[in-house]
Image 1 (cartoon, rainbow, N blue to C red):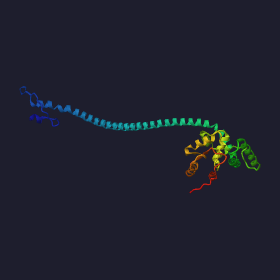
Image 2 (image 1 turned 90 degrees about the vertical axis):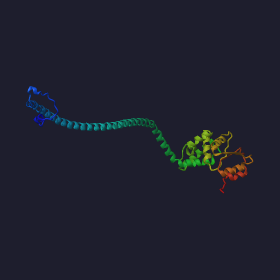
Image 3 (image 1 turned 180 degrees about the horizontal axis):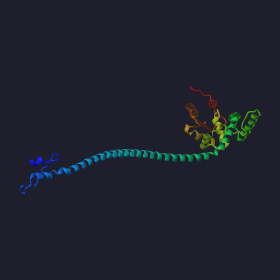
Image 4 (image 1 turned 180 degrees about the vertical axis):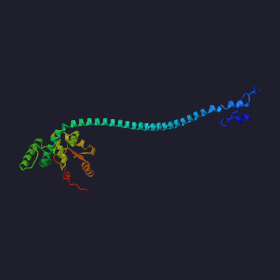
Length: 290
């Protein structure tokens, strides 16, 4: 206890076993003098520790600042990466659009080059249409005469008669075509092509006959020694449930009545020079709705 009171208060007390030999004459005063040297050795270490802690605190603050800067840089880097990927996608899309536009431009140039030769044809077509428009009055008048009066005559007689009519119209200052053609005035190329597929011959006389039949207000009587008109009518009206009858059939009149009632086409074959008087109201279209 006496030794405990001799130690300075600044020195932490620890349990120390000192080899004190009384027989040697070593007194407690000598022990105290040796122990008082301890604070002299510990104080500089504490000062350096304090300085180190201060430096550590400064370094930690600097580290936290650097870490915060690093996090900001990493966030900015992530944002730049996302922006780079988005711009890269836009770049790929723009490259695709440029490729598509180049292909479209190449096709457009080919199309324009191909249509360049059509300019002459279009100019000629415009001139022809203007001429047809000017000659429309006389051409329609001649066409009406052909449909009404020239159906039963030959091709040569039709041509001669149309030339005379054209000359007569010009004498009266009525414009008309110099080379009149019924097909060019009343004909429709698509319909004529369908007629040819159905069996109508492709010559101009047969085509004119088809135009006369389709535009006449009366029922056509076809002089058909080769059966071409018969074949053409059957093929053309097949989808409309065409009925084919002969005057020698016992029930042909009943068939005609049903066809008139339901609006289905009828073809009467093998007609002679004389017709049954019962057909006169039908030929004159003296029909009525009940």
